[in-house]
Length: 48
Image 1 (cartoon, rainbow, N blue to C red):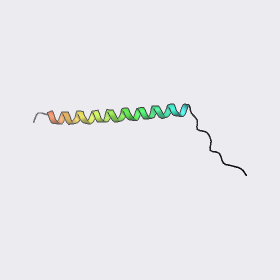
Image 2: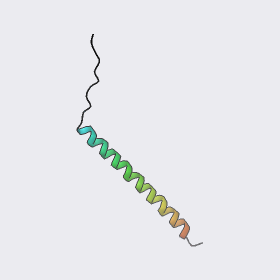
Image 3: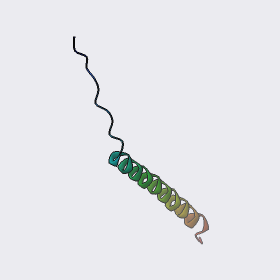
Image 4: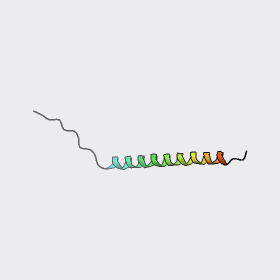
């Protein structure tokens, strides 16, 4: 009787790519939050 074995995960280049993508997404979120905060500050301080 044969058994099915799942392929072993590749521990190497894929983890580096995932790390880079995750870091890029985190930086993008931080940049977006900074932009939103800057817009709120600009509108709040706008002379009427």
